[in-house]
Image 1 (cartoon, rainbow, N blue to C red):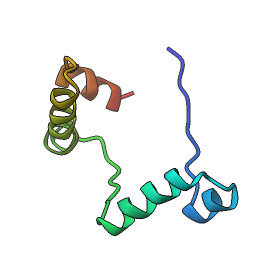
Image 2 (cartoon, rainbow, N blue to C red):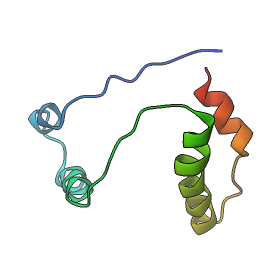
Image 3 (cartoon, one colour):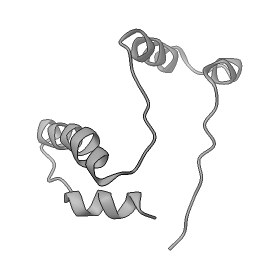
Amino acid sequence: MQKARLKLETIENLWDKKLNYTVQKAIRQAQESGLMIKRGFSKDAVKKEFYQLYLRSMKRFGTPPQSFKYFFNLSEK
C-alpha cells in the first residue's frame, strides 16, 4: 500500500500563493464560524466526531457511506 503525506501550510502562506477569491472566502468563513481542527485517531474520536458528520454528509449527498470499520482501519495506518 502506498502512503502519502500532505504538507499543510499556514493561511498566510496560502494567501501569498494567491488563492482564488472563492477559496479565500471559504477559509475566512470557516475561521469565523469557529472551525476546530483536532488531531487524533482513537476509535472513540473517529466514531463520535468524524463518523457522525460523515454519515450526515453522505445522506445529504445521497451516497452510500463506507462502514465505520473502514475509517478506523485508515486511522491505524
